[in-house]
Length: 638
Image (cartoon, rainbow, N blue to C red):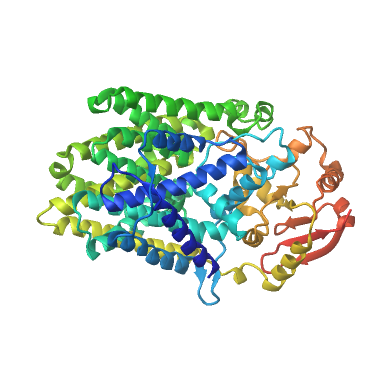
């Protein structure tokens, strides 16, 4: 209930402050309202990020944008006016979003939240650590343990993470639940405002039917049919979940469990494309390029696309557009390079990043990887988007005969081409997910196309049938997927043990760091990049006990290849040892020294873990959870 109250208060505060902003150049009421909400939110996030990091944030680009807009009087202050009818109706659209999000995230039998996915918990961890340590990076406790090495920034999708961090610091509530129950619903609501703004581009009359369609369009994207799994996924050819058929759907849809991280891309993408529709090319380019600030994975795609489009389209070739493109690109690269991508060059070598990439390079394997990670996924997309390809073919004259829509799909094509060429060749940027970063922009393009056809077609039966099948298929899939993966916490953990540990944790007043150990079979079978999902005690992440430090022996070998060498912050003990290999028989003494030096009072152990005998004298209390098989050790004062 408290998160519902926080969401409503957030809505009231941002809507209230947005009434002080005046944007004379936008006459449409919903679009004007949408831009003002997004402006207040983005300005708040950017100011918070700049203050916390003392200016070491890529969100400085947004602050520079607002300074420019105020100087040029594109945005001005005004005395608040009364909300009009359309604005009030738009605000109430958040109610069904709240209801659905809460129904999907709560165990209704006990009205307690399901344990979030490892990804959600990881984003919450970053939201906590960035504010706690003042660094816009993903290195968590390393920023505290080794600040001289991990004080920089690193590229990621920080918009919703900073948003969560801001709310967490104000309310003190669970970062993970704030992300799921406040941040994501609010961003979904903003996306709905963006969709409504597209309808408003065609008509000033917004009916109940239009409001309902806006909500349904949230489910537009790759279309999942269960038969695809049995036909195309035999033999598990694509081992990554991103490239299975449901993987594409759950990773990219705006209302999906994992796809919600792309909501800032959806929001800025639809605003950029809307300005393209309005033939305001400068604003379209500016907002489109800033999408990469929200999610750096889109950087190669959007910059490459706008750059190529600038070269070939006369309507974009203005001096000011060129300056925008050049300046944002240069500043982005400068910010990243200035802080060395958040990692010291010395450490870069110790983590065997590019060094190991070359060392373990297998040309035949890389060619196969490029095929399976590019050609294969594009084949899946052709299948998953097949209903929309039919739609495009049937109404190609109505779609591509419109200058703005034609320009839109040229831009989207260039985004995929530029993004594919760049990211697929750079292993360190996680080529596994290069498509999922760009697909939201394609989904936005489909939404704009559907709205265009809605107003242009005399006979809407064929289009309505195709769209309805797509929507129903995705809605059924998402509901079944949510509930299939949602397990009540009492089936995962012993409630009494968890309560006892929570009470003890609250009494621990010293270091907020918690050591953790994983079973050897996990260490040897998975590279460090996959350890996060295996961390013990994830139930305590909901209470903001995030700062877990891995104290496993750091030189246990695992499969080394060009797909498993990327740096991960879970290899902490390597930095403590300064990369000096210590024989395993002496490692217990190293663990004890590390625990005492950093005043660590807890050790969380995964199922099947045995701690070294040197640590046994330090243990004050042992908690064994018979359900999860995990052990939690409270250490003595020392």
